[in-house]
Every structure is written in structure tokens, then in C-alpha cells.
Amino acid sequence: MEIITSEAKSASYDTTLLRRIVKITVFTAAFVVLPCFFFYNSAFSFQFLPISAKGKEAYGEEAYGEEEAYGEEACKLDKILKNAAMGDKTVILTTVNEAWAANNSLLDLFLESFRIGNNTERLLNHLVIIALDQKAYARCTTLHPHCYALKTKEMDFSKEAFFMSHDYLEMMWRRIDFLRSVLKMRYNFIFTDADIMWFRDPFQRFYSNADFQIACDRFKGNSFDVKNSPNGGFTYVKSNHRTIKFYKFWYSSRVTYPGNHDQDVLNKIKHDPFITKIGLKMRFLDTAYFGGFCERSKDLNLVCTMHANCCVGLRNKIHDLGIMLDDWRKFKSLTANTNSSSSSWTVPQKCRYVTIFINNIFSSFVFMVSKYKETTYLNFFS
Image 1: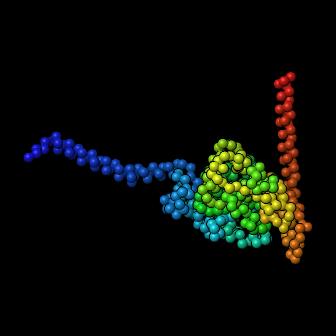
Image 2 (image 1 turned 90 degrees about the vertical axis):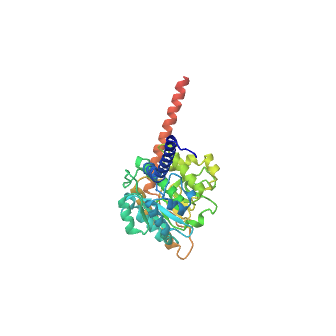
Image 3 (image 1 turned 30 degrees about the horizontal axis):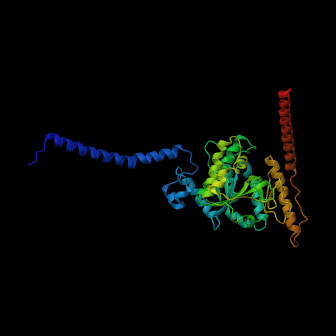
């Protein structure tokens, strides 16, 4: 008969107690500590759209970064995008603030171009207007069925953001981050600035095998040529792993090139080996179809969109875009019974003088810098 000593009983009791403590610790970690940890991470790390487990299940785990979650704001955005999407989950997106959405401002001209364009009015059903402030959102809801209020903490995007100002740069990079989120939600998109007039359905002019297509300020004749001068105001992007990685790389590159806007950074990274590594298929759109004030579409029988690029100042844009719409109306009336290419644009007008003025200043600056370098060089060797 085995005799159990008091020391053995005590050891057995200690072992049992230890096991219970371990179980309680594991239970606490699983149901209390870990949820608090994830809540802390989601609350104090930067996330554009918080995402829940339900959202990951719905959209696919691989579509999202590990640090992001699908939450209330993303559900709201997804509902709006779903209502506006085409059969292949393609949406048309534009952004406006209070200044651009005000009565008789750019938003009115933008929507009017769809109404008077050839076979473009139906595309309004697929347009989502992203409002950057509350007044822009309120105006949008009186004009259009698909509006989304993009919230940005501690930033006021309501006023006119002058080119390269702090607010301008913040607005441009906010846009890139937002578009990345749309791609993660598995939506293809056309992004269009609101100072772009739509005159024809652009889908027939897109390249079927490209991931990322972008309009140009200057087009060199080859859609593959990275020496083209891209303009981020008009892009057609298909949602896949390549474009999601590309937009993440684009957005993160703002740190590498501080003080630059998204378009300048794109001009720098379009040569980067990373683009080849991820296999991104990039194409540049011909200004014959996607033109602007920098390089006009000369044939009104071909033009799809026209951009008030190379133009500074909201009033100048509104003035010249109004004339552009009148040019288009005249062209349509002339070609009602015959296909004529005799009509041409009478713009830019105010934008032209602004562009010439800016170019002259820039040329003078370059000349002064070159003379300074030349003088410094000669003094050094004298």
C-alpha cells in the first residue's frame, strides 16, 4: 500500500493550481487581451478604411493589407459604388470640394458635358462624385444620385487649393490613397478631374490588355513610351494585384520625393524597376482622343475628353470650359446632317495667356540659373 505524504499532497495541489492559472491566462489572452490589442492597433495606426472580418471574407483576404480592416465607412462606400457600377464592376469617379461644386462652377460644366456629349449621358448612371467637404456633398446630393462624403480629419479641403500649395498636395495624395482603397474593394475605375469635359464614350479608345492607362499633357506618338508626359487627372485602372501594389508604391513614394505632387512623383517612378518587377501593363493615352489645353485634340470627330490642364485659376478654367462647351454645341449642330471636320476649338483664351505668362517666368528662371552656374564656373577657374 502506497503512502501519500503531506509533501506529495502539497505538490499535487500546486500542480493542479498551476494548470488552472495557465488555463485562466490563456482564456484571458484569447478573449480579452487580443481583442484589446487589435482595437489598439486599429485605433492608433493610420487606416484609410477600417475593415472587419466580414469585409475580408466578402472581398477576399488577399485584396487587403494585413493592417487594414473593413468597417462602417467602407460599407457605406461599397454600397454607393455597387449602385453605380457597370456589369464588370467599373465605376467613374471624380472629386470636388466646395469651390468646384458651387453653383455655376466646374461641377455644373462637368455634368453638362455628359448631357450634350455623344452617347455619354448614360454614363452618368455610373459616376460617383467624391465630395471632400460637407458643402460639396450637400450640393452634390441636389444634382446627382451617387455622392460620397470623404472624411479627412483635421484638414479643410473646401476652398480653392492653389497649385503646389500645402492643401493642394494633401488633396492630391489623399486622392491617390482613396483610389488605392477602391482598387482593394475590387472595383475598376475611370478617375476624371471635374475640369475634364466628356464628349464621347472613352471605352472604345482604351487598350483592352492594359492595367493602368493615363492621359498625357504631351503625347509622343507611342502609347508604350514612358517618356510621354502623363497627367493624373484622367486614368483608367483595372483592379488586380499589380495595380494595388502599384498604387501602394505610388503613394509611399511621396516620402521619397517630399514636396512633390502625385503627377511629378509618377514621372519619377514610371522608370522604376519595381514597375517591371510587378508586371504592371502601363499605357499612355493619345491626346487626339484625350486632349487638353496643353495639347488640344485637333479633330472634333475623334475627341472623347478635353482637359483644362496647363491652366491656373478656377475662374480661368470656368471661363474657357464654358466656351469649350459652346464650341462643341456648334460642332454638333454643323454635323447633324453631315460629318464635317471644319470646326475647331476657340480655346484656350484666358488659360492661354496664363500659360504663356507662367512659361515666360519659368524660362526666365531657367535662364537665370544657367547664367548663375556659368558665372560661378568661370569665377572658379579665373
